[in-house]
Image 1 (tube, helix red, strand yellow):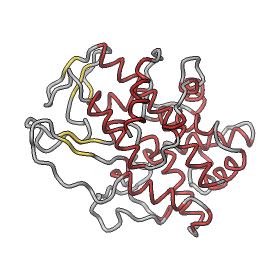
Image 2 (image 1 turned 180 degrees about the horizontal axis):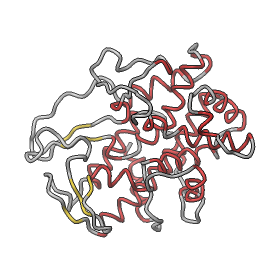
Image 3 (image 1 turned 120 degrees about the vertical axis):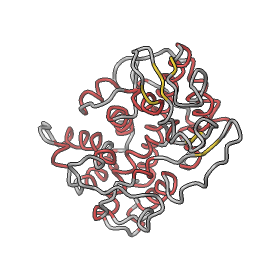
Image 4 (image 1 turned 30 degrees about the vertical axis):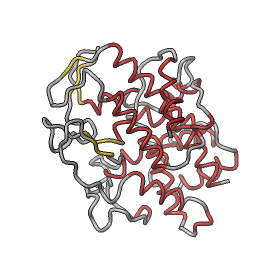
Amino acid sequence: MRRVISALLACLAVPLSPALAWWDEGHMQIAYVAYKHLHAPVKDKVDALLKLNPDYAKWTAGTPDEKTAKLYAFIHAATWADDIKGKDYDYKRDDANSATAGQNIGYADRNQHAYWHFKDINFTPDGVPLPPNDPVDIVTQLKLMIATLPPSSGATDDVRSYDLVWLLHLVGDAHQPLHAVGRFTKQLPGGDTGGNAESVIPATGEAIALHAYWDRRFGSYASPFGAMFDADDKDGLSSFGVNKISAAVSDPQAWIEESAELARQYAYAAPVSPGKNSVMLTRDYETNARNISRAQAALAAARLARVLNDTLK
């Protein structure tokens, strides 16, 4: 673990690129870079599964040929787990303690499962009591879905398709530092819900939640073409090298522990406040945030490609 963290921290020395992110474009760029490293037979298998998603026709509308349709579907699918939170989908809010929280039943599941997107490794810098962890989270579901995806699992194609679109999203989420941690302080004794309670002011001048600041490192809404263009820029995500030892780490719990360590060291670093008051970020803070985000997204892409090549080979 220390070796992997050291490799990630070494990435802070790389030259800066334009701001990157885990909103739509962040997930799309991660998916695109991962797709370029999939074996050809695996690309065919993931497309066959993605065709079972009800949004497949929307994802591929207007594409000029089958090859482009497969690529666009894969990139679009990485945002589906966030899309279903919108009112157009009529998916229900639920919680991690519900009877159906950890189910894996395919597209018959009409719950949003917002708690699948994170696992808070809670900590306190000043002795505030910590609550118990949720029984269902991103780690429990990633392990379940990775085990279910191979054809040999015996799961139906409907379930495997559902798990695939979730995997495309959750592997990215697991590498966003503030999807892995919750901080409890005397000013925030009920916790900060992964940086959503703190407010920061970046160089752009607006006040924004700390969590959202990190989520938007790649931008916000984007088309697949836009995400591909940005990723293939000379300083984009496609050009970022990933340590092979780090890329080979396959345990979702290890991914979360890495992200939590980065959050404690950098996301919560000064000048971030232990309370709700807005603070102006320094250049050093923003430089670290940009470089860590880029390194983590590239690592997420490499690990996503490895998971799919291994489970669908």
